[in-house]
Image 1 (tube, each protein chain N blue to C red):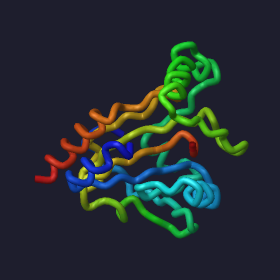
Image 2: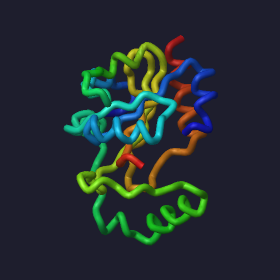
Image 3: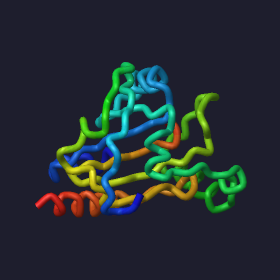
Image 4: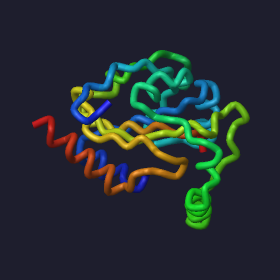
Length: 134
Length: 39
């Protein structure tokens, strides 16, 4: 994500990161790992549910293709941090682009733990969101 | 929700515990990223 932060800024767009972790956990994480974007917390999963993000299953989590993608991420240098015991490892995330009036332009709720849109997909979604304000 | 719908003005908590609303961050196109877990 940090690779495209400059392009996002050039578009006049913003990024908001949401975690379901408690605020104190997020504060401790940010102290060790500062992020270029604001991070907020949704410990009750209200917004997660509003945007229809689901939980995966252990069967899907350990599916060979999902495991292979985790391994590929590690080979490419992505560190997979040890999750907090309180974390729900099955809760999935998602990526969404909103126009300036909070209109949903792009929706990508993950279907499994490694399912994320590409940076090109995200930039394209933001371009659409940007175009919709004119 | 589907594209074209207005996303509700959801309430969040900032890391310092204060309340933030989605509308605090809109007014320009916004990429909203929901994490699986902190990592």
